[in-house]
Length: 636
Image (cartoon, rainbow, N blue to C red; front, side, top):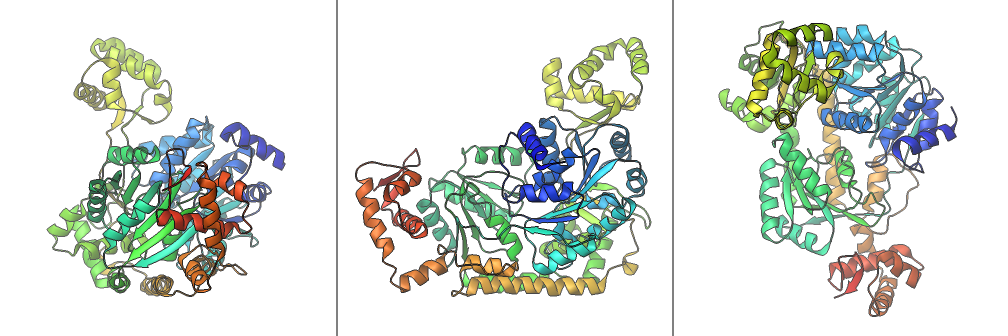
């Protein structure tokens, strides 16, 4: 299919007239049947790179992703556009999976999102051969590499699916990968020939900076008062997120906090308020931001710093997606870098400690050896560590290591809405309604709201909405649903909103646990190198920060950005006078009237746009300028 056809789909389905950089080239490569690796920055529109060619093909696109929240969000977005999509992930029950896979074979589902752990199940491997699969998309592809920062062993088994579907092309996508990881991805996914599309890691509108201070809170407040607009502040812990948000709110800044420990409703409400600018500053752990498309974030602040540059680059890259000037600032104390070293040791617990934690988990759920495969359980880390007298942080890291080893999966920000499925025929249901007049009105209400789909698949329901629609209490709705489930008229699964621990392998004898000691050793070494890169980034003050990041990701022949703290410091040392000249011109023009940066730039026509924009930043920081409600610059 030609590129014009891709453009037509882009316009008809998404309403866009133009591709973002590299989207067209990547989609065309996939459409031509080539295995393709796409490296695009956060906010670069990775999902369209596989969704567009998949819609131009006949058949089903299987999308592998480890992020349950993200897969649910993408399924919802596709469904809103009238495209049939579904998600299959750890924690779903067997009946639910069975119906979904049948719909992928016999129905018209175009996208099936799958967690990597589900790929290796016997049920999935048996059914996938009956599906008309046109494309395999692997999101967060860095997870396949032991040299990546978020390794997932289940990703290594994607190659088994490729062998079952030898004529189906694969597209692998990630926002950040070093040259070593790029090579590893293509080899482990069985690329027929190397084929990598890589967008530049440079963000010309993003000014990186790092400040070493004694009082991080005071510096944070100072920065947020100088830089207007929407902001994200990343912190290390849930407690710190809440404390910092309260502090900022008391200082007159519209701030809120976000972390994985909140209920789904709380997270959704906070996120919506921030997106719609009722909240200016979101103080959050790294649970926040994935999949959120808010283009007008003006600053991302890290209070402390990430333990790898890949994560830092992705999080910082959530600023300035609209192409306008934005800032990425890390605020640290000297002891933060020492703390990274200590954290590295804690993040790689000994094999004996891993076995102890695994045994404790088995005891916690009274799980017999050989049982438990695929079972899902509510999990409270505080209660668990208190029960077995375990260290909280070290146990958390041990659980993540057990997850890397493919033994368990820990979903911290888990939400699964209530679902029903009528598992009898419409004829049998009618006969039941005739014989049970007291339930007839309730069943008719279900069918009016959710339609015939309840006979062919599990549908998400809201007990609160049903109660309002039928004018009865929510408790009565639940009572009716449980009664129908008890009589085997339907299957009813109430919503879950607690962190979930899932056994992705049958429970083993702890002392005989199959842990890959060599791989654990290699992971520790790889993580050590990543921490070293972060420490070097923080301590060095000679190399442009943007250039440092680009070099880390293997980008060559890059130039200084001219707007990071290192570049600006160098300009000051060199006696960079044009900025002072622009300052005078800006003051002269704005004395006449307020105007936006774009209009001001057209009025002055600067020879050096970078210096001109930097002059505006410095004037805002020193409070010589400010924005009015219409985002126009005015003199103070």
